[in-house]
Length: 85
Image 1 (cartoon, one colour):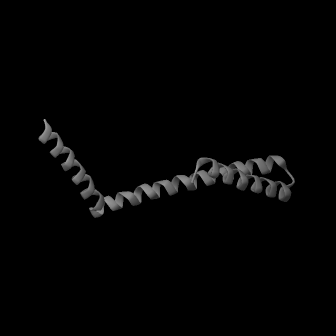
Image 2 (cartoon, rainbow, N blue to C red):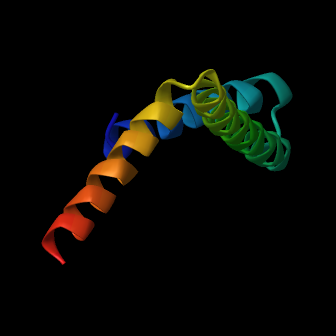
Image 3 (tube, rainbow, N blue to C red):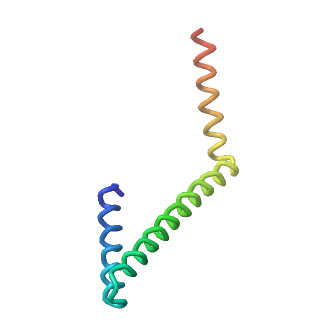
């Protein structure tokens, strides 16, 4: 997903939230504060999602699949270095 598409969607969602809060409360100040809190919650959720993806990629490495690929790549680099120098 491109950043522009993400930003457009987030701004649209926050705008809809702000309009709804203003309509429900009748206060622009309350709508602004609650919209900022909503934006913060969205960012915390995004951060937790990224942490989960990093954690999951670490579990793949523990299975040995990625570790083998890394070891093979190191062996190839090592062989190339020793054979040419």
